[in-house]
Amino acid sequence: MHNYILSIASVLIGALIVLVFKPNNQKNLKLLLAFSGAFLLAITIFDILPEVFEDNLNPKDTGVWIMVGILLQKVLEYFSKGAEHGHFHLDKSSNRIPILLFISLGMHALLEGFPIHHNDDILIGIIIHKIPIAMILTTFLFQTEIKKGKIVLFLILFALMTPLGTFLADQFTLLQNYYKEITALVIGIFLHVSTTILFENNEGHKFNITKLLIILIATASAYFI
Image (spheres, one colour):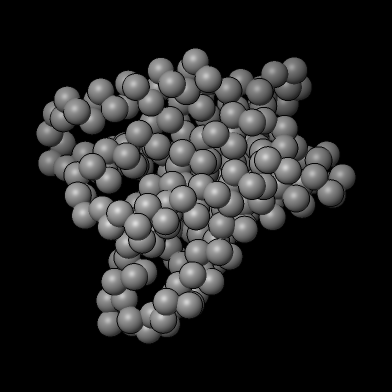
């Protein structure tokens, strides 16, 4: 049960931080996003990746699933415009919920919920990743002409997608039988999202000591958890 509560809470916490504190320092938000990307990448490499290759009789097939995840995330980004790693391109004069954005983010969140019931480390990585994404998403949605009630509904539905994925994985034996394949696919998604966060946001390819320290702290935290 705590898996469901924490994954929902991560989105709500991110939204509440924006609504209550109204942070407007984009530099700090980018550093938080860099921390989440580095933590997600480190958790993926340290914990999730070795798990899918342990006692694996078909490692090449697992590699194929990882590549499928990378390519799937690339396809989803055509619809979300990179929202999974903090890029939002919304028309501020729009008064309609961006359906394609919701479908893309929802599918991403649903898939990442599948392997949670086997590995709490995935849950920690997802929580740390979702908080800054929810903050950025909330900030941009409230800058549009979309009614506040619709935005709240959007955020609630988004928050429910990851626990829905966990619930489906818990209840359906078929999904449990393909745990390693699904987890490998999620690894591909995580690798794409986390590396994009870390490298695409490196403005002007300039050396940033603060960002480097944040990445090192996130990596060390993921290693010792």
